[in-house]
Image (cartoon, rainbow, N blue to C red):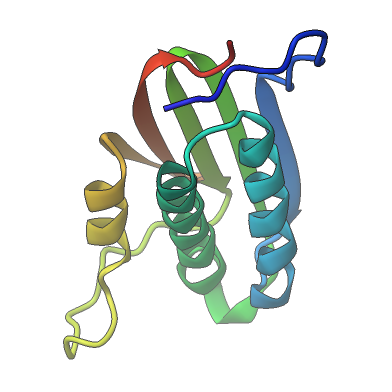
Length: 143
């Protein structure tokens, strides 16, 4: 799942943390920052794409659903690579709204997250929602 680092190469950072306004226009930069951090971990491309897609879906849910009437609140993304697992946590500080009935074209974000991650959980608080996604790497995420 991971490629060993070349001899003498510095180890990539084991954690990632960014916070930005939960608005659609800001999310591509946040997604790309997460992707760059994951690339430094030398995960295989398919696994990295799963992580980025699931993380981006959680970010998009925060932007679209957490803040009423288009108010811009924060979204925070944290990730940590530990031996055997990688965890991405997306937190907003808005209001949880249960998924609305769908016409079949939308409303599949949480299902997508559950499918892409090895483990996922959502915690709904009075002051926001946290989505935690974990991928088992089968070996140390950092060699």
